[in-house]
Image (cartoon, rainbow, N blue to C red; front, side, top):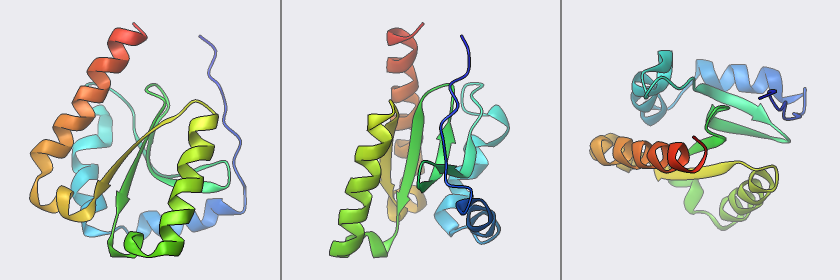
Length: 127
């Protein structure tokens, strides 16, 4: 299968690099389990520009974006921006899993289980 290249705003490239260099504690914690194809052999990227957004984590092979929501995601304007981002990512065929920072920090096993369950469903649907 030929790899589908998703467009992105090149102006976001430097900002994504800055975000990678200043990751949150929850991003660092989850990244330990996603990097280096540790998650069932799938390659994840962090702070990946997609369309006009930056995804916290992205796996091309799974068409999956993982977003971690900190306290700012409780504000109304951020909720609206998150909804727009998710809608646009879904339009190009991506799935989005969202977790709150405290879930990653306090219940990482369940977060990893949800990701693994997504992979199980994906592999059954797209063998």
